[in-house]
Image (cartoon, rainbow, N blue to C red; front, top):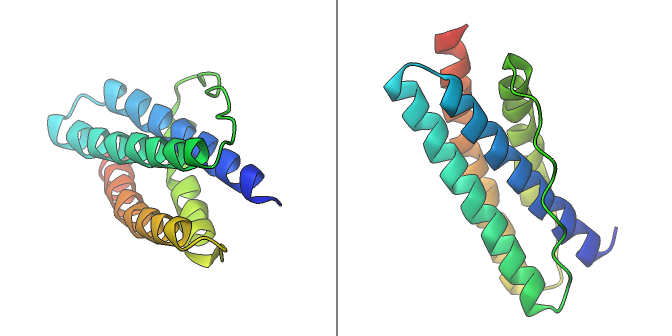
Length: 126
């Protein structure tokens, strides 16, 4: 996988996760749980923007946003699963660019925070 493909994939995944978190937050009637998911969505959008900025700096095209998904309980579970995969991707990737290495490390650490917040919401709703 090329650097351009890796960044594009990461960008789209972060956007998709932000959309899933936002949609799940809209459906949850409990303000304290909704706030947790809104915080996850905010971090995911910040990750996507940081990745988009990294692509712009390197002259790479930014892919169009993913289509919206149907809202469902499965979407929240997919978000939980995705955060684990994302964390591994960010923390295990070796990049030739120190700036990107730092970005991926930071995002990977924040994915752990997201994963824990989502896990708590799922446990309390389940």
